[in-house]
Length: 104
Ligand code: HEC
Image 1 (spheres, rainbow, N blue to C red):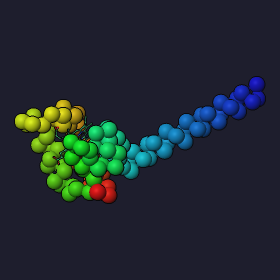
Image 2 (cartoon, helix red, strand yellow; image 1 turned 90 degrees about the horizontal axis):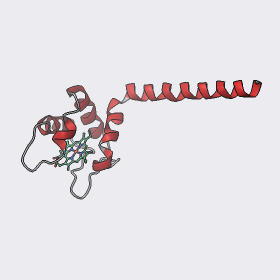
Image 3 (cartoon, helix red, strand yellow; image 1 turned 30 degrees about the horizontal axis):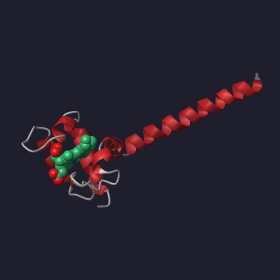
Image 4 (cartoon, helix red, strand yellow; image 1 turned 30 degrees about the vertical axis):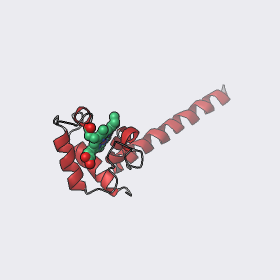
């Protein structure tokens, strides 16, 4: 009985530590959390790919303007309007800030 309940207590503590920390990170940098959804294409370091533009180290307001514009369908633009429609303006600001802070 004793070992089992200790084990349970440990797991509960671990869960609290984990979720507590995740919450803190999110509050500190919502942009970094949101940017995980971009990494599969733009690279986890924001460096882009063969046909994907890099985002890291770019000017924040330029990135923000680009994302706002890319919410609407444009000729030759395939993917971003579908993705960006899911984000509100605060989230776009957080994303732009995050990528602007990254090393190019
Ligand atoms: C499925 C792959 C994919 C994902 C995921 C993705 N992108 Fe893109 N992104 C592209 C492609 C491809 C382009 C080029 C324009 C187009 O075809 O939509 C692009 C273009 C951009 C541009 C314009 C850059 C320029 O120089 O023209 C920005 C800014 C951008 N993406 C930001 C983001 C952000 C922020 C996220 C995460 C919320 C994200 N992208 C997620 C594929 C992706």
